[in-house]
Length: 330
Image (cartoon, rainbow, N blue to C red; front, side, top):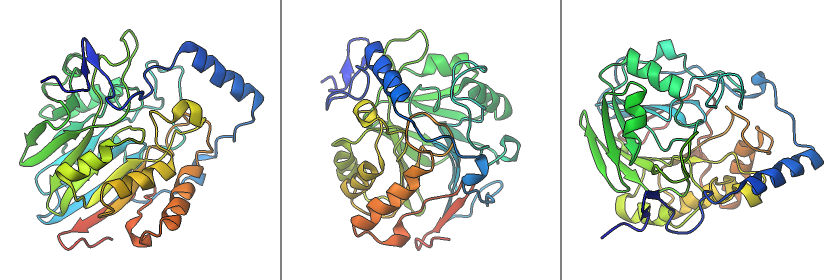
């Protein structure tokens, strides 16, 4: 039976629009709205909190996990069996070209040269702020034995950029890398790069089995019923990494990007277990909200939901979250 997210020549969101049906007219409407509405200016780089990473080199000890936020959707996830990168981008712009497109607001939380040996890279979809060609080439050259995990349809692009071992996953598909079990999970989004059609490649999040429990990396997603499905099939989770930024104007962004209130609801749908780590803010100005607003709105939504304060971990750029087998949070 063909899964409901498959269509001839590509993929769709089975729950309806995930942003793929936006037109040039919608974009013009947004640009016209921007001309008529004063959006907040970009904050200076020093307005974003930063922390010194605490990376284990080469690996963490058994029974421990370390997660370091490098910026946007880029994390270094260290388990006792594998060092993983998610949606890596070290380039100064999220763009197909070096001379235009969104500039970084803040430097990456870890210098590329300071990375430990990388065993695998997890890619959620093909948008330029998540799959950066220059970074992919650099990783492939620096870590020639690295393995790549990506949704269906990405292997030709990654191999063109220098990847050697690519695991393509459908939703609920599994890859085993150095003893780390990685499961692709549904997301509500879309895909497109220059010279491709919307939906040619699949999009997804990931669940990583680790010593402290399961880690959910939500990828890029709007809010949808898939979070309850993920909880039923793979929950509970020790760590929930969910996007909270790039959400205004809401009429344009809602199908593809959660706002903080959506992310807190998604955490509830996932079972309210473990910690919530917000991402997808603070590195690139992609939309109209104040770049410093997402973490404050997330904290406010968290308080309104009556959730334990210690279970919300808004990381500074470069900050490392450490958990051991007893769910110690330091």
